[in-house]
View 1: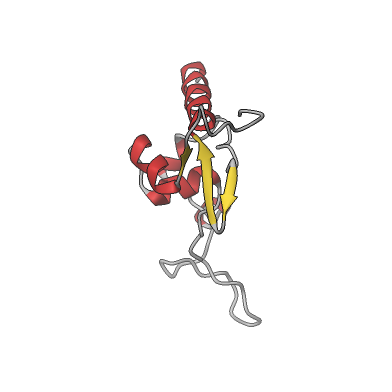
View 2: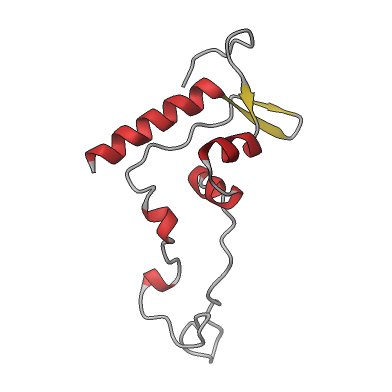
Length: 114
């Protein structure tokens, strides 16, 4: 990640611009950043009700049923973490194009090592 952002030599990208350039959905981007909202798939046990119920209605038998790993998420295992925003303007996070390019290069190198 660049130590300093120079507006004369770099560009700030929005989430939408990053998604477009990486050809990914907003949901995939949020998962890469680790900010995806996880829909509840299980209910907490209540006194007298016994086992925790899964979405399918049956009892949960393993932790993987509580938070299954999506196929898209499996590709991120071992990848470097996505960089934090370079700056937040109002409520809009922006990333330096250089920081995103460095992350892409690091992710490609990590994928080559797997």
